[in-house]
Length: 230
Image 1: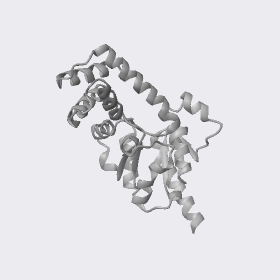
Image 2: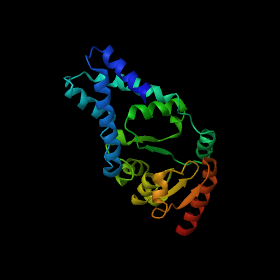
Image 3: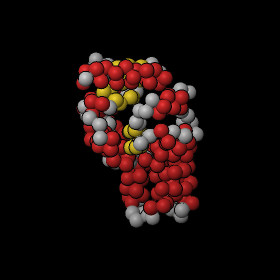
Image 4: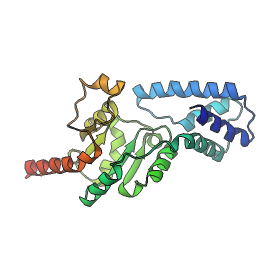
């Protein structure tokens, strides 16, 4: 966190902004922490960009060129991007799903669209997905069911033919079910306070331990659905 704040400050100062480092970073971090709390109940994404521009305006820079904010946030997020790596079974699973002709989309709750897009490209997974959507770009967060609509409309499938796979009960599974989709919970990293809080109230349609369990499970769901419709 401190390294990211330092990187942000260095980019802003390099752009010629005269800011008191200690007070600016303290105010920026306080604003972001309040935002992170609020978005978990309001499901609205105002983005890091929004709050950075807002606080810079309060420090006397209300009309900064867009490229200054973009480059500064790029430096801010670059600090953490090297720490993100795909799970060992992610690429093999995506390849298996593509070979079985499943259509794939990605929906991420995130405060910065550019950060997500960079991580997707660093992981080499963009070719597997028809659409890559973020709450930062759409302004709403899972579990708001509206965030799923571009994928539903783009594919032209009935919602009950679509499966959401995620590790967060309150965002991924509840959001999917609110939108009429099936929700599969991947439990591998699911032992979190938020998931424990929802364990008795949000019930996924299926549970898997590993991503590699997904292709065979989807085949079973697909075959059962065809049998019911036939």
